[in-house]
Image (cartoon, rainbow, N blue to C red; front, side):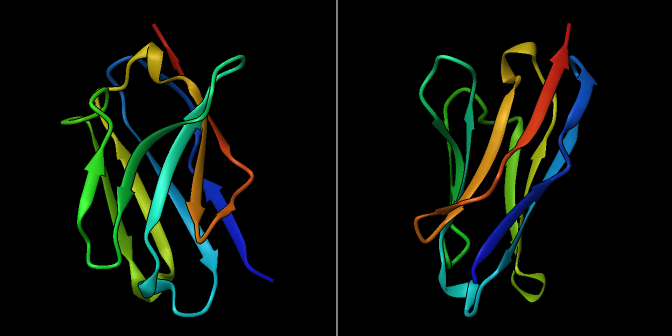
Length: 111
């Protein structure tokens, strides 16, 4: 059974950093593109960052220059390094692979 497990969320002050992890129990992990998304109550889930199987990355304009997505294929894990966090980054963050979703991890940024 394929599972995606996010971790690393928490409470941080504005300007701080967090690193999220998405661990996937899937064969041939290196062949998948992976995306990070976030959602706040009453709003649609939005794409934050993505990384292709070849390592190409893409970011939402709102996080460019502050967030970095990376992957470690040996560990079946994708990371989202979040720096210079802002209160508007507060959301539940999800990773997605192959149409599957993890359970999400809460990120709260206090002002």
